[in-house]
Amino acid sequence: MSSMEGRLVAIVFFFAVLLASLVTSSTLQAPSEQGTTFPTIHHSPAPSSKRTGIPAPRELPSAVAREKAVLRPRKAQPSPTSSGAPTPTKHSRPSLKPKNEAEVGDKAGLASQVKELLAEAKTKDSEITKLRNELKKHQGKELANVPGSAGTPVDGLPTEVESIIQALQEKNKTFQRELLHLGEENRLLKEKLNQQEDSPLSDTSGSLATPTTQESSFGSPTQPSLCSNPTSGSLCVNGPPLRNSGSSSSDVTKASLSPDASDFEHITDVPSRPPSSGSNVFKTSRCSTSGSSPNNASNLSVASLTERIQRMEENHHCTAEELQATLQELSDQQQVVQELTAENEKLADEKAMLERSFCQHRERAEQLSQENEKLTALLQDRPKTDESKAKVHELELRCAELQEKAQFEREKMLNIQQQLTSSLRSLEREHQEAQVAVKNLGEEAKRLGGHLETERLNNGALARTLEDCKVHLEGLKIESESLRSQLDSEKRKSAAMDAMEQAAGRSDAHEVLRGIRAERDQLERSCTELRQELLKAHSEVKTLQGQLAKVRQFLFHRLIVLTVRKFFLISSLLCQFRSIVPCLAFRCLGE
Image (cartoon, rainbow, N blue to C red; front, side):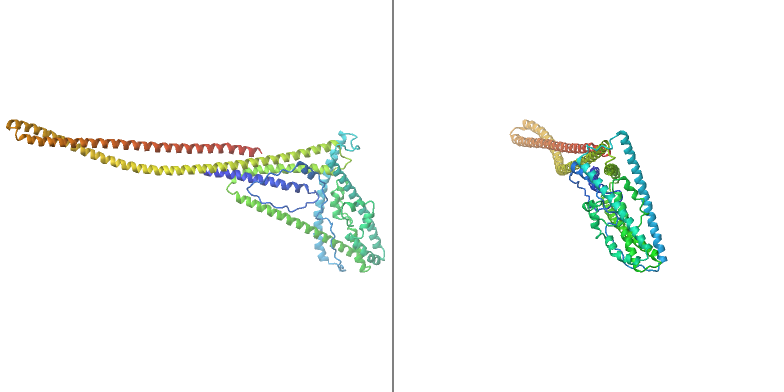
């Protein structure tokens, strides 16, 4: 009975722990899934909360705050391959003699990395084309269903959605202007570079252009020109001044964040784009200091390779840091899992069932969050010209339904957790009360057992006294029989003496007769005393027998009462456990 109660309490406790961990993990995963962008993955160290057996208090965020968090525009986060921060370039003069052996290994590594990047770019391009095709299909269906609605503005949108769409359109326009400006700048720099390579006086022009190109590569002197340009005037307002790094990989990742479908085409142009303008001018200036030599092209290729190697090393360093953060998070998760498994080794069977239910709930939550993310991404990435009122309203309704479902699921899980904790506490209280009652009954049984032992000892003493009385009574009976026989003999003697007295004379016989009569009276008195003692012994034996029967009846009644109490207590506890455990099991399986 005690082992079954312990197992049931442990099962309920472990289920409460898993529910608390599910609630905490769902609350921790929601902001991290909303802040991610599809081009790159950014790991942010979340505070690790230690899971304990005590369930957390009920915290229900408001629906308005959640809608604001979902509909908040995503900021363009720096990718690990982006060159947002100015990287220090090596000003060491490249050697005139190329080292072929070292360059072969570097070129092989660079070729492998370029192949990997190309494969990844192709996969991303295929995904983007699929998404674009799906968007085109949806737009075609909407245009077919609602003709003439493309040119009309959407009137029924909420203010927040309209503001988000306007902000995204402004960002899209700024990105397009920036790309046009950078492409024009790149074209001009290419023309300058070609002119400098063709001109015989490239040394003087390269040496004169070196400080300006170095300053422009770090983004300091060219900012007024960018801010003064009317096409890029919004860049100075929305964020920090951008570097004039040409068309690097960071521009591709930034352009991929814009909701315009035409910007996805920049990803396929990554391998075919030339190096940055600032680096080209800087390399021409460095190469021009060595004079007009026939090794100018080889020096340019070596400098470009070194620059690409530096970028690869920076990207590798960023990916290594991200992998380190991921490994740290994985180690924290592994430590938490080890703690949970160490605490719940004795509950393997129950744990399997609860883990299945937990996995189902987690997959359902992940599916809902993925659907929510897809819907929000589709809502944010669509341009204003292709939107229609019905589709936006449908997406909003689906997002609201998903949020309501997630809120309902969380409230349901919290209610189940509260019910389980309350039932667990009530079971613990009942278990403690039952233990106290069993302890009291055991003490009372011990006390009654001691009393029974004393009564048995007293009964044995009374039985021994009764046997002694019976033996004494038998002796008294034998003595009374002997006295009766003596009395009869004396009566016969007295009769004979009377006859002799009558015959011989009555003078001396009177005295003998008086003596005999006195003896007879004495014998009769002793006989009456013995009869009284016998009656008294009989009465004492009867009283002792009555007391013994009463004691036996009292002890038997008390034992019956104790056994009946124990039986009813055990049956009530079993009924309570049988009524609670199936309800909990069906509820868990239903959830």
